[in-house]
Image (tube, rainbow, N blue to C red; front, side, top):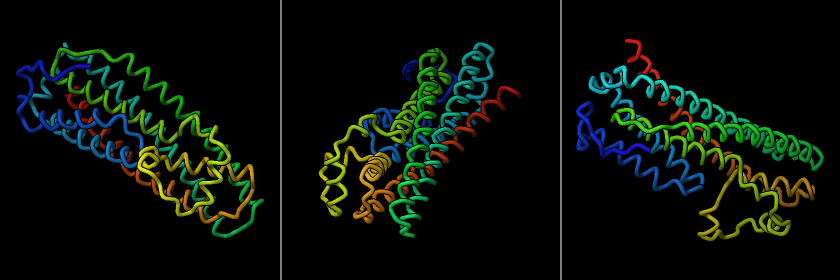
Amino acid sequence: MASFHARSNSLPSRQHPLTSQIEENLNRLRSSQSASTSSSLGQQLNCLQDLHDYVDMLLQLPLTQHALAQEQQRKCVDELLDGSLVLLDVCNTAKDALLQTKECTQEIQSILRRRRGVEGLASEVRKYLTSRKAVKKAICKALKNLKHLETKRSTSSFEVTGILREVEAVTCSVLESLLSFVSGPESESKLSRWSLVSKLMHQKKVTSVEDEENTNEIANAEATLRSFVKSENIKHVENLQNELQNAESCIQDLEEGLECLFRRMIKARVTVLNVLNC
């Protein structure tokens, strides 16, 4: 990965507010990459949005545009543009996965409110689980595309493209964390029946700090629904509704953050294309 240490005269100095803000956001994102809760992912998406805002401001500077337009940078810039297409495609996959999961979650909640009974609910839950399989398959493909992009990434001796390389790398990392969160841990299907039933029975269970740090609302809802399919017991419907509501709220927050990031990434891509076409 390129560093910020070798500065040229093609961009503002390291002390310039823009480059300082970019470095600060990059460092903040790198230090938070091990976090895997919906709250931490939301914070990462917000920080990533700020990073892309600063990058866009950097791209608007005449010195930056002059540097990007240099013939010796064309190959690297083309690679970055190709990479931006991959990232945008991955963003679309993540948005589709969240939307599909949210719609299925809302449908089950609607059935619970209407109290159609075990039979109707079980059928809808099975549809939800089938949908989740398709979502996970699409996510698996997107993760492979991200890995492929990472292996193709080269370093750059030019400052401006070096910065863009670093932004691309940290964007890859955040999207990878997001996709993994939406897909859910592979071990969730191996959870014991007792742990799932116990969770349903204790509506006001006090969650430990460790549990909070490992919370995945989407995976929790799916695990609870899988448990229901096995038992078809609607005795604890209220707890099931709580799990689904938590998942829906989590999805809504991630959707909003992802959509804002998507727009910023498109804006930056258009700016670079305009520079090359001038």
